[in-house]
Amino acid sequence: MIAQIPQMGTSGRAYLLLAFTALCWGGNAVFGRLAVGEVSPMALVTLRWLGAFALLLVFAQGRVRRDWPTLRRRLPFVASMGALGFTVFTGMFYIAAHWTTAVNIGIIQGAIPVFVLIGAFAAYRTRVGWLQVAGVLVTMLGVAIVASGGELARLASLTLNFGDALMIAACVLYAAYTLGLSRRPLISPLSLFTGMAAAAFLSSLPLLLAEAALGRLQWPTPFGWIIVGLVTLFPSFLAQIAFIQGVSLIGPSRAGVFVNLVPVFASILALIVLHEPFRLFHATALALVLGGIWLSEHGKPA
Image 1 (cartoon, rainbow, N blue to C red):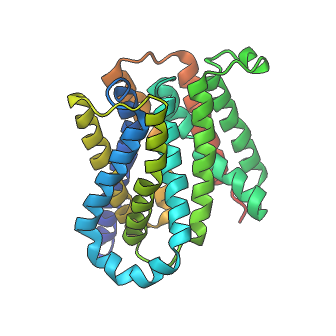
Image 2 (cartoon, rainbow, N blue to C red):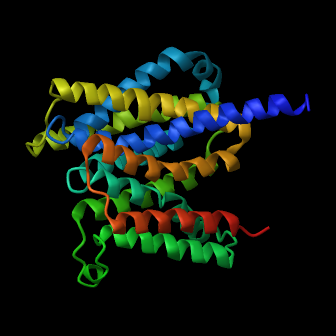
């Protein structure tokens, strides 16, 4: 009995940290909607990663200094991963928020684990069980229901909401980023995150200039600065730190399950904060996405 108490305490701390992570990432969909009219997408991306990088320099400089020799040798990898997973994904994420609801964004984002499974099979011929195939199909049905607004007949005529289509593309890119992490250098996760945050900031600058050239750049309003601060502190910094700590406590396999809470928290926060409608087709799609992920997780070949 005595030996089990620390283990229960460790798991409890991990569960709180990982639930907090999912809450922050679910809240990012709400922040994206709140940013509309307050700060332009690429301005938000640039300021977000500048702020996150500044915070990481304060808290992670010791680890970065220790890991710098390895990090320097893998700079092309770190730069490409930061640009793909952080800059391009978040840019598409915030642009999508101009065209669709936070509920839709959260539910579609919940399909990322299934996109990762499809990518792993396509790139590495990873073994896939029949339950996993069923999970993919069920999850894709859920995404299709959201993207079609509950009217699957719209898919036949390809009349998708632009924001939903952009969010699906963003999730595919993030799945590619996730698969790429299997080739990450063997350094502290915090050092790797710091390097990728720096790369995200630098790679966002050309896109910020492009946004300005198109006449769509909007620097934050007073409320927009609050959004920038919240996005920097919660989804970008605290959530990542909490996730790293949660993984260290219970391992990546158990920790990864908590990502499934992101669409749940996104839907709840969208209802509370934005008063967005949550219709029957949203509930159906959410159940299908979560159910499909459950099938995929429990159908892994031995």
